[in-house]
Image (cartoon, rainbow, N blue to C red; front, side, top):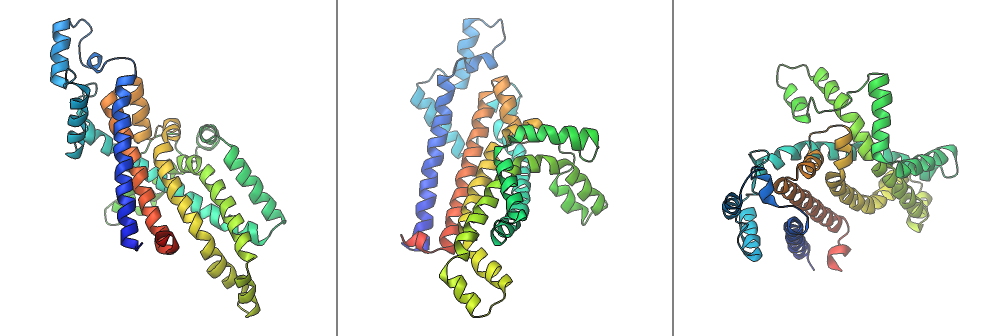
Amino acid sequence: MSFGQFAIKRVLQGVGVVWGVVTVVFALRFVTPGSAINAVAPLDADQETRRAIAAELGLDQPLYVQYGQYIFDLLQGDMGFSYIRGQAVTSLVFSKVPATVELAVAATVVAIILSIPLGVLSATRRNQPIDYGATLFSLGGISTPNFWLGIMMILVLAVEFGIFHTSGRGVNVGDVVLSLVGTEPFLDTLLSWLSYITLPAIALGTYFTALITRLTRSGMLDELSKPYVKATRAKGLPETLVRYKHALRNTLIPVITVLGLQLGTLIGGAVITEAVFSWPGLGTLVIHSINLRDWPVLQGSLIVIGTSFVLVNIVVDMIYAYLDPRVAYD
């Protein structure tokens, strides 16, 4: 199978998964208690008014007609209308995407910067203090709930010492980029952005950091014991070149796969972290929609999160196949 055929196969599989997500999200509205009419109708609405609202929303139609109309609207980019918020769902949901993506990418960057060097040091200094420290750190990172870590960091670093902001997103990464060409001081804007995003990025990325550290360490130990590494050492190559050009490069192939999968998980799993830090992203929107029983917004948010996860996985599969062609040929 060529790389092009492999890519087309993965895209078609992704379309099937997204269709499944849309179907499940659509069905959830009908298996949960309550009626969508209650979100629109006045409390003292009579049956005539409720029937008129049902006809306007299309709820008086058979289920398969409603499903077909929902799919047709989605293909046109229409996720419905939130009568509770008085706003189109598509614009509302996509206005929250940049904040969630920014937080997920920041958490991933934190994880990469910390985990890969730590994993390499742990593997090359096995059974030394730095190896014990890295193992203890990864164990703590995997075992610590991110909501508890977030609350503790808020209490200590934000409330007690006042180093960071406790919540919100006062400055975004776009403001930092614009400050390079605008009138706002770049350094002040950058520091302000860091004061908002550092704590939620660390809270969200700690588990990810611990996971990649362990994966890098085990991969490096495996690679360093292989014959080709002994051969490169026998040729007299510098140890730094052996570790970082040969061993680490082969170790990064499975790490990239996990990175992609975890990035998709971070986009969809940032709900708790966003709630702790009042981060105005998709996770906070999902929680508010559940509390308000705002089904159109909840459905739109879940579809966007699911589609993002599928897209990230497709990209990762393609990168993996590019780095290791045996994946596409098998």
